[in-house]
Length: 147
Image 1 (cartoon, one colour):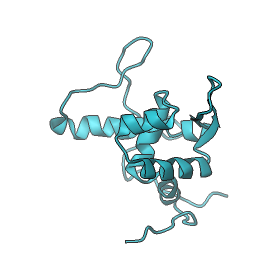
Image 2: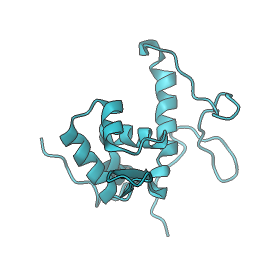
Image 3: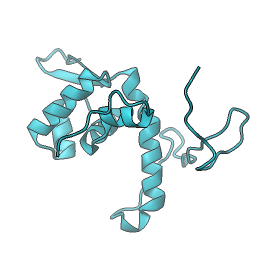
Image 4: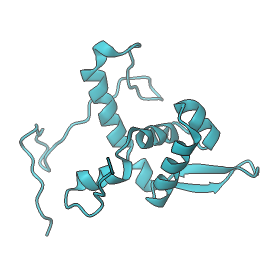
């Protein structure tokens, strides 16, 4: 099945998925958020084939999620660094991880928890709040055309 191009869709979720909608891309961003920068380290962490990793990294660079830079150690290698756009996916991955911790706990081989690196305290669940601070639940939001 051919992949449908969603880059022109009005829905921001559809356009976002057009950029990062496959699991390899999100796992690459997850590893980059943890500090991975080199092709070989991504490959080792993910266990992905070189051709798939090459394509996903190229797309993430083309979309401005990652940038490719000379290695900081002065070697001939290239490194991949998250851009501001890429770092913006942090909240998406936290939300996805929190959903997995809550909804898939019974299938997890190891119990995990998301904690603050400095104080080792649990991270509060992400919430969707109105401008006035009210907690919003599914069905209490809608997408409208911005003026």
